[in-house]
Image 1 (cartoon, rainbow, N blue to C red):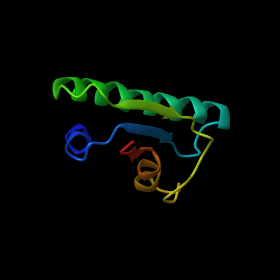
Image 2: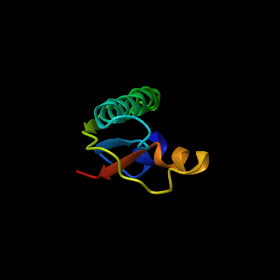
Image 3: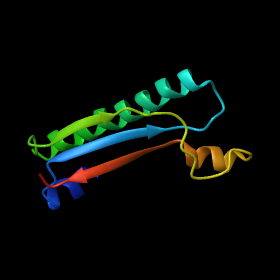
Length: 90
Protein backbone atom coordinates (compact mmCIF):
# COMPACT_ATOMS: atom_id res chain seq x y z
CA UNK A 1 0.00 0.00 0.00
CA UNK A 2 2.85 2.40 0.81
CA UNK A 3 4.26 2.03 -2.69
CA UNK A 4 0.86 2.81 -4.23
CA UNK A 5 0.53 5.88 -2.01
CA UNK A 6 3.97 7.12 -3.00
CA UNK A 7 3.59 6.33 -6.71
CA UNK A 8 0.18 8.01 -6.99
CA UNK A 9 1.17 10.97 -4.78
CA UNK A 10 -1.60 10.47 -2.24
CA UNK A 11 -1.33 12.80 0.74
CA UNK A 12 -4.18 11.66 2.98
CA UNK A 13 -5.12 8.15 4.05
CA UNK A 14 -8.24 7.42 6.08
CA UNK A 15 -8.43 3.99 7.68
CA UNK A 16 -11.67 2.44 8.94
CA UNK A 17 -11.71 -0.90 10.71
CA UNK A 18 -14.63 -3.31 10.52
CA UNK A 19 -15.47 -6.56 12.25
CA UNK A 20 -18.11 -9.24 12.36
CA UNK A 21 -21.00 -9.18 14.83
CA UNK A 22 -19.81 -11.97 17.12
CA UNK A 23 -19.14 -9.74 20.13
CA UNK A 24 -21.02 -6.86 21.72
CA UNK A 25 -21.38 -3.58 19.84
CA UNK A 26 -19.08 -1.76 22.29
CA UNK A 27 -16.41 -4.43 22.00
CA UNK A 28 -16.67 -4.40 18.20
CA UNK A 29 -16.01 -0.65 18.14
CA UNK A 30 -12.81 -1.29 20.10
CA UNK A 31 -11.85 -4.07 17.69
CA UNK A 32 -12.49 -1.74 14.74
CA UNK A 33 -10.22 0.91 16.22
CA UNK A 34 -7.47 -1.57 17.10
CA UNK A 35 -7.57 -3.09 13.65
CA UNK A 36 -7.25 0.31 11.95
CA UNK A 37 -4.48 1.40 14.35
CA UNK A 38 -2.47 -1.73 13.57
CA UNK A 39 -2.67 -1.00 9.84
CA UNK A 40 -1.76 2.66 10.46
CA UNK A 41 1.31 1.65 12.46
CA UNK A 42 2.54 -0.68 9.73
CA UNK A 43 1.76 1.82 6.97
CA UNK A 44 3.68 4.51 8.85
CA UNK A 45 6.74 2.25 9.03
CA UNK A 46 6.48 1.38 5.34
CA UNK A 47 6.17 5.05 4.34
CA UNK A 48 9.18 5.91 6.50
CA UNK A 49 11.17 3.19 4.75
CA UNK A 50 10.22 4.77 1.41
CA UNK A 51 11.17 8.19 2.78
CA UNK A 52 7.69 9.55 2.13
CA UNK A 53 6.89 11.58 5.27
CA UNK A 54 4.29 13.88 3.71
CA UNK A 55 1.32 11.54 4.16
CA UNK A 56 -1.33 12.10 6.83
CA UNK A 57 -2.93 8.95 8.19
CA UNK A 58 -6.17 9.24 10.13
CA UNK A 59 -8.26 6.63 11.87
CA UNK A 60 -11.92 6.99 10.95
CA UNK A 61 -14.11 5.81 13.81
CA UNK A 62 -15.72 2.44 13.22
CA UNK A 63 -19.42 2.87 13.86
CA UNK A 64 -20.31 -0.75 14.28
CA UNK A 65 -20.85 -3.73 12.10
CA UNK A 66 -21.03 -3.30 8.33
CA UNK A 67 -21.16 -6.76 6.86
CA UNK A 68 -19.87 -7.61 3.39
CA UNK A 69 -20.42 -11.34 3.84
CA UNK A 70 -22.44 -13.70 5.96
CA UNK A 71 -21.53 -14.26 9.59
CA UNK A 72 -22.84 -17.82 9.53
CA UNK A 73 -19.54 -19.23 8.24
CA UNK A 74 -15.93 -18.80 9.32
CA UNK A 75 -15.07 -17.59 5.81
CA UNK A 76 -17.78 -14.93 5.91
CA UNK A 77 -16.72 -13.72 9.36
CA UNK A 78 -13.12 -13.47 8.14
CA UNK A 79 -14.24 -11.31 5.20
CA UNK A 80 -16.07 -8.99 7.57
CA UNK A 81 -12.88 -8.41 9.59
CA UNK A 82 -11.14 -5.81 7.47
CA UNK A 83 -9.69 -2.32 7.21
CA UNK A 84 -10.80 -0.05 4.39
CA UNK A 85 -8.43 2.67 3.19
CA UNK A 86 -9.64 5.88 1.58
CA UNK A 87 -6.87 7.63 -0.35
CA UNK A 88 -6.85 11.29 -1.34
CA UNK A 89 -4.34 13.22 -3.41
CA UNK A 90 -4.72 16.44 -1.46
